[in-house]
Image 1: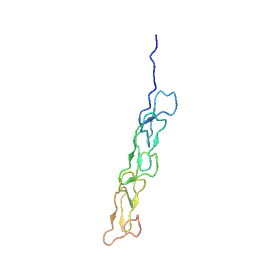
Image 2: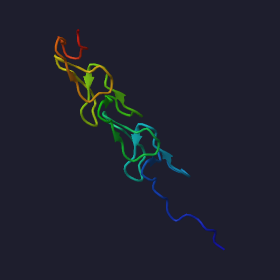
Image 3: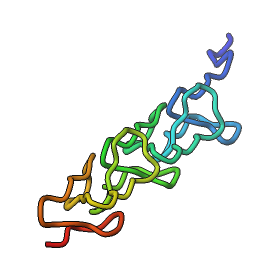
Image 4: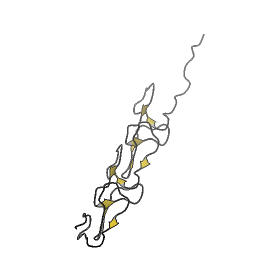
Length: 129
């Protein structure tokens, strides 16, 4: 009488990997990384401007407008600092507000123009009254 057994090994699913032989299960990709194909031996890090905030994902999310990350393999994006802005998704850096404009809060998608009687003399500054 023959005992039932495996006739083939299964590939690790997307979002997971198997780094050694003889595994009984695969490992989920860590936050900040992804596996977009089955059967991988390692997960790839999300590039600058993107992230994963959960384990076991097969695609990275882009940083939203007003946020950025210059590092790879991160689990979240940072807000653009005051005096800077981020207009698009997937940014690896924020832009400094030009002379004559300002961003008084962090995480903004645009700079405001200085009003009558105020100015900024250099990029990325707060208005002077």
